[in-house]
Length: 562
Image 1 (cartoon, rainbow, N blue to C red):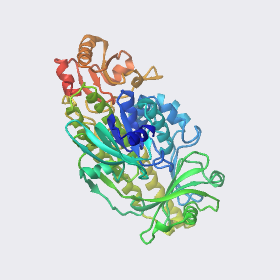
Image 2 (cartoon, rainbow, N blue to C red):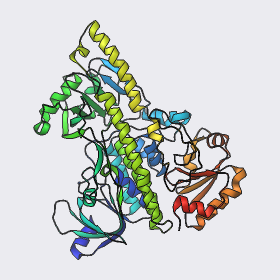
Image 3 (cartoon, rainbow, N blue to C red):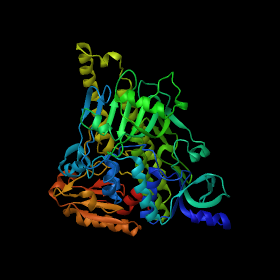
Image 4 (cartoon, one colour):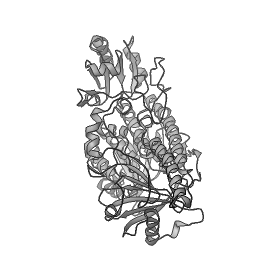
């Protein structure tokens, strides 16, 4: 990066508003949020570029709604699987033998059409999308660089930092240690630098929770293979899917389609007596043959190991002017796809708050709500992921599951019942997706109403302050979310226009960007009722009521205005 290289030569200090360590989905999304608000930020990451390996493969509907909010959802949805490729999750004894269970889901093309007709729990602006993190990161990087006006500093690492009352002084250096470190002076530092976070360790903040959980599957060491096998589709004797899961006594595996053209992310359970540290590409081919029951050629693109069985959340998310986000504060067993999506939620929550404080519209007290709001979500979501992992990982298998004849048929029928129930429990999760709530947050003005129950597989839209604004399709075609302001919105029925305008005017006088949106449409009034709603930049309801007796006081509560 030329700016850093020039600073190496000159010895000058680079000054920014926010320094972000880590350019995965969390750091890149944060840069988009800040860049769209005109905040100067610098991202550093010791990697050479965005991810090569597939890593996370499922973008939840709520994350897609956030991508829609920043204008990139269509670009993301065009990536990954072809538009007509099935996105089913299917379970087999082995890929080429008995199919045990399947959850059929719409293709990407169907999702764009079907979403407009959905009501109830899945009434959303976007449906989930099956796309590899590697593709998402490339899009996020492109837009982050355009919006911040600064290239992501790949190949640069955070060395150390100190903070004082006015900001953070950090040293960043080339990842290969060639050349001197550069001093970066920032108002705030965000550690989105992963499980081994340099920032978290420097702050002395520990993880809490469970780790080392052992299960037959999704508990213990896993061997990851990024592979190419174009003939897989012709050899498969079943309908295509997005995710293929093998359930047998010899090797438990899940495999996600990366591009629909023959690339796959393959993850195999490692047995207690095995040591994968010296496994070769030939071992990868052996494991693929075990799981698939096929004798077909594969090209191994990369291999690696990782540990399943984590349910860890950091004890703190903030210390002074330094914040933590993403894997730096929560580690999941990747069931339900919750790690990457929770990380994006962290970035969204922190982004608008940092911008409001840096612009002088809000007091630094607003930033204290980041940990108050997001840490309970980390605990909630890691708990859900642990439950999903138990559901599939503790299911026991024996060789008899693959036996021919009456005994094998009976066991497979039993397994089918268990797995069909499990797949719906793990992958039909509107409650996890849309049901995050910030009850108890100091910047949520509760009106005493009872929030809906938190249930993984059900979501009850509610205007109770602290949760996502219920989604509505306007005329069956336009999303209500597209009619909101990018920052704050006051939603109100026409009869409350004067009271709503007073609330808008008070927010504008405090320096905030506030949009008035009158909800006269029958579908809006049916879904949202007759009360006014104050909607935050992250589409969370901060307040509801017939009128705000003291609009300025409400803004001091919801936005910590000065």
